[in-house]
Image (cartoon, rainbow, N blue to C red):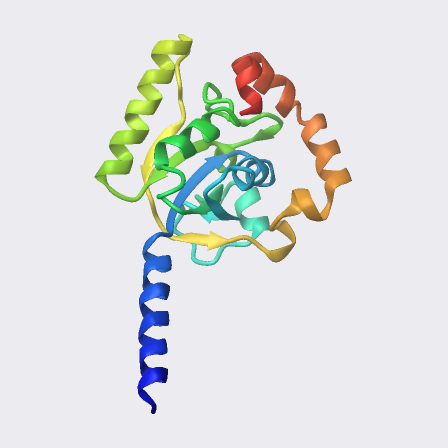
Amino acid sequence: MGKSLILALLILGLLGGNVAAQTKEAVFAGGCFWCLEGPFDALPGVLGTESGYTGGQLPNPTYEQVSSGTSGHIEAMRVKYDPELVDFGKLLDVFWRNIDPTDAGGQFCDRGPQYRSAVFFADEAEESIARASKAELEAARGFKIVTEILPRTEFYAAEEYHQDYYKKNPLRYHFYRQGCGRDQRLRQLWGAESKK
């Protein structure tokens, strides 16, 4: 192997290592996972989103198992992001304004424990940021936030047809979102901030 090839491989390895080190993940649950992807995908610094399931004991759950409410899992979304461009606190700002944090029975027209809202933390720093963010919102808004703050557990990607549903099926997604009353409730709770 020539010296120039070895040097090129070393440089690529170093660059690749830096890129990987700059990627972090966050997991949020806010009812239907289809409805959380768009707001996060639009946020600068977010590299991608993935719909899935977390919080239960059943390995590799299916949509049918989770939506039945018997698997212990919650519909959730994993966000991959560059922490140099967006931080966990900003992700929380977007999350709060796209859910109803006062509803313990699910989200909007999706009812049951599998649709409840939650922030999943990876470490003590994320837990502290999430709890502080929740307390600040309660103080500023004057409402009781029931969204859970839980340790992150295994995340299972949802079936392919759920990924980027809002892009693949824009008309069906629009009717679902409107019929579920999501945007109306978000405007009631957050006013102009619901468009953040």
